[in-house]
Length: 133
Image 1 (cartoon, rainbow, N blue to C red):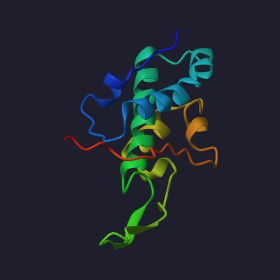
Image 2 (image 1 turned 90 degrees about the vertical axis):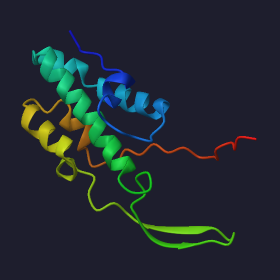
Image 3 (image 1 turned 180 degrees about the vertical axis):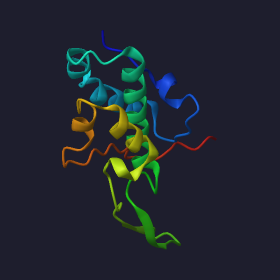
């Protein structure tokens, strides 16, 4: 039976500024591996560790520098606001310690196939925060 993880599970001991709704979407993406995990009789504890590591891996990539945009290369301001970014150098499993753990534990490639499919997963928020009166 597939293990379900929650936002609370993911952020327990993990600091992120990514909104809860986006974390929930990442959890859902990783949840797509349930059929593979169950079919290969992966234990509940290993499933939980794989799923937590996968979501934290993606969060680390997204929040590493400027919400996943890469390192800031230039800024301007006095309100012709501008900011330029260098793209992230690596979005594969070698980029984080969570990814390295996934590579060790994912013997059947259930989670790895979600993360290393030569596509970059990026979730971003657009808008501005309301200022308190």
